[in-house]
Image 1 (tube, rainbow, N blue to C red):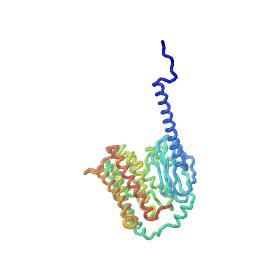
Image 2: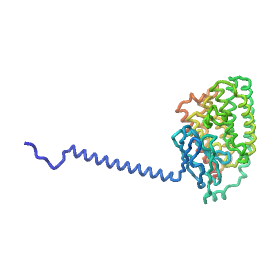
Image 3: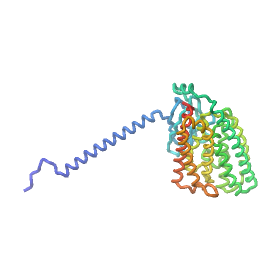
Image 4: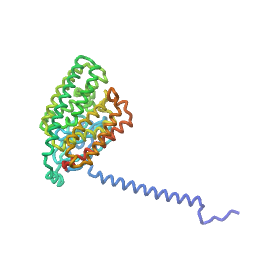
Length: 404
């Protein structure tokens, strides 16, 4: 006869029910954790300003934020990689390059009160405005600024450095232009390298032209802009300067049609030196110009190899950027030794580490081309550049030069 049904469920069923309850509890816990994490992120980024870049405009293109730390999420709704910049006059305060189509990136910026300009993708797109309102903290900081006497020497010596490096650039571009004019492709390719290195030693300061020189606001773009930021890319008539020469010499492997572009670069190199010497450089920007360059190297240039995409001499540019960084640190070394010797040691260690990384990619003939540098090696360059840039960010607070 069949066994009478018991009121107790079979053991397998009891285990199944228990397992389901555990899964439900775990799922609930995970959901709660995810919700809390999302809420925390929303709280952290609650003041994040979103800017959407369309093919020919930005939305919004007029912003107002309080002085201090601000986050901007830049959404690329166009069909090409773009950049977005905050400009103080023609000084690039912060930027994000190579934002891929359909993606977004965040720019964090500590801003002093005032009016700034913002770029919007293509260089031909209309610029926007960014108004930064004062706060109690920013006004208190302005009242507490230190005496500038201690910085007269470093700033004067940096001016001498800019003058000498400007002469190097002019001489190197002249030689490059002559080789192009004679149609000597091999010689022109060889001379492109020292000319480009000379520019990269000036590049941090070159992007900080005096606000009074508004008529020259596009000078650095004329010298250094890549094809990405022109409507017709390499075929755009506005695409001139170093990278147009690079494209002709290394991609097209020809000097044809490059003579007028080289001559314009000669004139712009002379003009660049003049403007660098005409500008006044506040002491707090002496460090920020090189720190910003290294942050850009770490965040974008080291990984993509986009800076010298036709010639692949990116390592030469990185080393030149590091040379001007060494110069700035050495100028401030006596002040740092007195005010924060520990920070100076951190900077020196980070600088030596990046130097060693780059030196490891050099042969007797010079630096390796960047297309032969592995992803792992590029990552190491990025990490070490970021470590140095982060250390440099500590100099202004250590010397009482924090803007806010």
